[in-house]
Amino acid sequence: MILLAVIIGVWSMIFLSALMRGMETQMVRTAISTLTGSIQIHHRDYRNDPVVENSMDSMDKLDQALLSIQDHDIFWTKRIRVSAIAANARHTGAVTLVGIDPEKEAKISFIGNAMISGRFLLAEGKNTIIVGKRFLEKFNTKIGNKLILMSQDTQNQIASKAFRIVGIFSAESEAIETQFVFVPISQAANMLKMGTSISEISILLPRLDITGRQERQTAVRLQHAIQDDSIAVEDWQQLLPMMKAYLKMSGFFLYVWYVVVFVAMGFGIVNTTLMAIFERMREFGLMKALGMRPFQIIKGVVTETFFLLVSGILTGTILGFLSVAAIATTGIDLSALAAGVQMWGIPRILYPEIWVQDVVVAGVVVLFLGILVSLYPAFKAARVTPAAAMTKN
Amino acid sequence: MAIVEAKNIKKTYTQGKVTVAALCGIDLMVEKAEFIALAGPSGSGKTTLLNILGGLDLPDSGNVIVDNHHFSDMNQADLAALRLHKIGFVFQAFNLIPVLSAIENVEYVMLLQGVPKTQRHNRAKAILDDVGLEGRYDRRPAELSGGQQQRVAVARAIVSGPAIVLADEPTANLDSKTGEDLVLMMQKMNTEKNVTFIFSTHDQMVMDYATRLVTIRDGLIANDEIKV
Image (cartoon, rainbow over all chains, first blue to last red; front, side, top):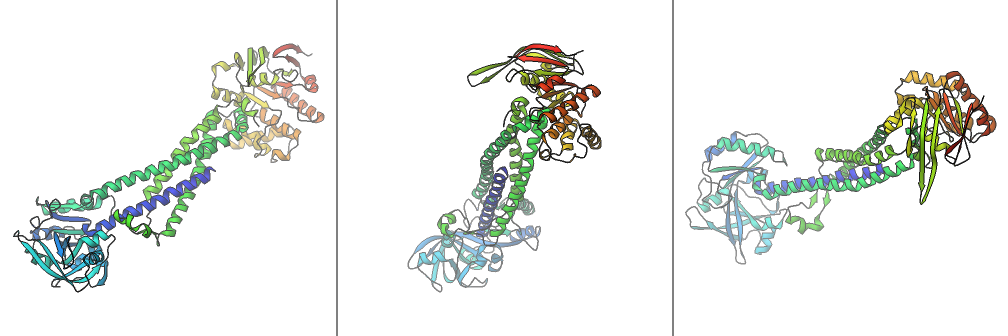
């Protein structure tokens, strides 16, 4: 019974933690690919007020700084990103105008693999724009139709330009499809009279470090290389403080879940061990009569529990790995909950991810607490008087 | 110098609302190498006294001294250590460990004492030969007769050279012939190895072999007779 309880407990701990970690990782990946990037360089006031005035124009310095982290696996791109108004004959609405270098942008953000209709942008494309699927529905328009964009230029004048829709993209959430419209960066710069100024540089590191350590270190190196207080270099945790807070909370609740599982398991361990002790009371009485010290009885009971726990932990861990492997390629389809999960940036298909630390913590928690709770029955066995114990059936 | 001294031992048991006075003030002194039978009817307190002399139970009042060890100064761990080195037990129901063989049952006490493997194996074998079980070392208790099991129990009790052996109705589950053989074997241990034996019994045959007969009635010593 103890063995079964431990196996099921450890299995559930590992499987659930794999689902949660997978969800966390995918949420962060989605957030990073939704234009955030692993690291961003922008004017220090840009995040508080994303207007054309808060743009960067010291491109030589920035190019030099980027050379300091050059790696064939690190990609970066420049963008212009401002708030704008989009309008056509049927609808008017607020959007975020994003001017991109199509070739570089495709390697960094979601937009590279998001096209579902029409074509992607070309760097030299004149007055071309791509919009989201939901945007198309909202504005009741289609590929080939015109769309007017208006914003404030660097001379504080209203700048407007007509673009022709050449492609439609799909994103993880409808909010993204509605909010962002993409044009070639040269077109955006032209419209807003920005010259060579840009709003931001987005950098993608080859591997996601969900703790953010690697990104932080690279950001610090870059900031040091730039040596300009008007420019801020921020990693994704700084750019997405709510995501960072969620990850911290999620990690905390995972371990709270471990404790809850263990408490349930612990009752089973104590109860079953007590029953076993009571059934073997005569045996313990005999051992004491023959000269076994109370401490040796405690040691014996705890050792038996230890081996049961280790067997259970190993088996539960193997089952955990097998069950994660079984859904590793197909994932768990959350489409039925699409609206709800979208709101939180959770992907529609959830792929589990085992973290070594979770496996180790699960094992250590169960082993340590299992031995701890077995002490009570062990002490009960050790305290019994031999004469009383040996009269039990 | 007495090897066992019991002074004013009292013990009561409470079962539900009923309180039973098992021992009402027992004084007993046992010299080394005595072969004593504690006799009396069922419920007289023989087993209770034996358990208290062996430290298996604690008296409500009074003191026990075994081989200069005062029980009142000892905790459970100390009493266990005393039993390990100084006191051997033979029980009515044999109480062998069923998953161990005869030789392993005898070795068990020496294992607890920390005796090296070869030494304990050789001593266990020699003792089993002494009690007439040569060639049956590897048999489990279920493969031995009642008499043979009790012989293993006696071997286990004396293998570590205890100061006293306490035997609680050792012949109760044996036929008369087997029981007598057992008592004769223990008598031989008593005379050859100077092991002190204290029996609790209501078997007349055992009482006949005892060199001293202590009769207990209603929790008190009614008679204490040294037989010539």
